[in-house]
Length: 252
Ligand code: COA
Ligand code: AMP
Image 1 (spheres, rainbow, N blue to C red):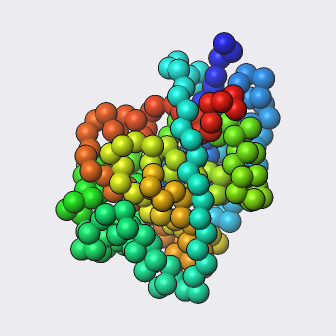
Image 2: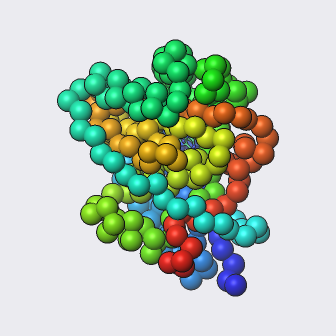
């Protein structure tokens, strides 16, 4: 089998992230040697066409993948159009409650998210108590090492009569990896991109539930909550490191 490569891009303004630069854009994919050049170009385009601004720091990291990849089928999408942020947040809370999460836990977790919109990853929340479980206070947990199989992406679009949309493509991939773990109860997210007000709730039971308004346009505060029924080092390793294809194995 040909080597596979994990390609990770991050871009910032005002210097590198670790030197205090402001995050502009990130992106990641898994690809073959043959496709490497083309895929890196895609990440360059992504970094330099972002509504958060023009980066002055840009880095691409390419690593050979050593472990074998398993397949995670993509979540099915549902779209909800709501007239306001208030209605969007309310709907997100209702959908989380349908996943079996108590209303008080949901309120507590949303409050945590409001107070931690500067966190660079997701907050891991105990689905029973609403306590934050990850100890990486300003960092959170960043889900990584996942990539769509292009043929499966085309099939997924066609099954759901959708057209290509990069943001949704990325978000569905991330949510599919997160929700494929049996300890994940649900995820909720809205972007830190000021122009992108759509968010979602995701779960293995109900799929990727896209909600048209989850924040006000112009607002740079975003966030992600992962509600879990259990949490340990193996769960963390799964989210951060286990490489997976998003797609159906039978499509290759
Ligand atoms: N927001 C703010 N800062 C970020 C960031 C983000 N989303 N992602 C990375 N950074 C900064 C942080 O300062 C980070 O340091 P930290 O680990 O102390 O937080 C630093 O960059 C290095 O991050 P790291 O993850 O080690 O860099 P990387 O080059 O290996 O990978 C990404 C960067 C962005 C590719 C990876 O973190 C990621 O998020 N992968 C998934 C991306 C994706 O496909 N997202 C789909 C959109 S939902
Ligand atoms: P984004 O969807 O990239 O706009 O990110 C929305 C929020 O999710 C950000 O504000 C971060 O808190 C968080 N986040 C960004 N990247 C990741 C990731 N790879 N894994 C988990 N959370 C992330």
